[in-house]
Length: 116
Image 1 (cartoon, rainbow, N blue to C red):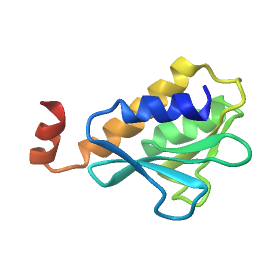
Image 2: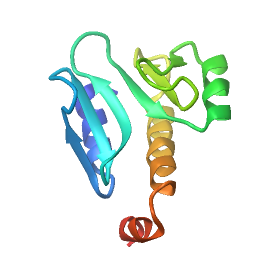
Image 3: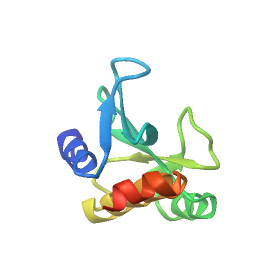
């Protein structure tokens, strides 16, 4: 996976938007104004995803390319280093999980809007 494939995959999700709210190097993907993924556009390709706290720990133990979330809550966020050691299928699954976790915290009305 490369940055363009990541961007295309995230933007394919319902109600997803992208922006640079922090600086010109950190691309942020949101679902209805709630962040589900952040990535750098310079340097080593990596991204942060939201995780269930227990799953976050398991992924860190299982994959060398998964570390506690950089500049994020270490309990709820993981940083994934994209170096080819983790398949695109697994990466997309983790992105899906992050998106769904954020959606599950939205109001029922907003969830219904996404599920239409």
